Length: 212
Image (cartoon, rainbow, N blue to C red; front, side, top):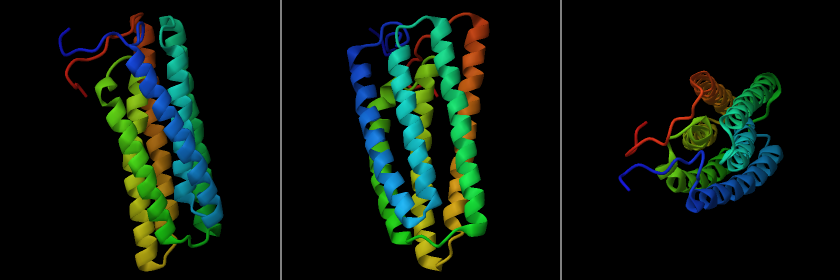
């Protein structure tokens, strides 16, 4: 076969299913770690990133189910992902706004350390998913969520370093607000593609040779 992957939406290769299961486990583990540390330290950025991991785990699980389903059900699954990301974005936004007025200064070193651990987990997931980054809205949502996580992790590390350097709590909720915006951006992209595919009445095959 040429450089293109097989159609993942209809006949997903076993390797892709194994990759989805692996990144699902990685994300559930990191959700547990970050939510506990986020609650313990009062870090809004870590709590936002924890919800990001939870949202991604749900995305991977739903994608596993949607593989091989009809276009109607794949479109519904993609829309569920999109609307779920919007809800998570609103939750993070609310938590961040509360923190702007009633937050405490979290330990910057702890934030950066957990952010670095999360970055390692997400880079691992990103590398596993690299060859499967194009496809229908379900396949695309997996790549978008994982790619955005790497960006969010770098922001969390930066927030921790700024808190450590300045003693100010402001970098923490501001990064959480940025993560909320990232949720919204991904949700809109997923919903737009799902709607386009539903109107077209077909699901595109997986792209070739690393198209963006």
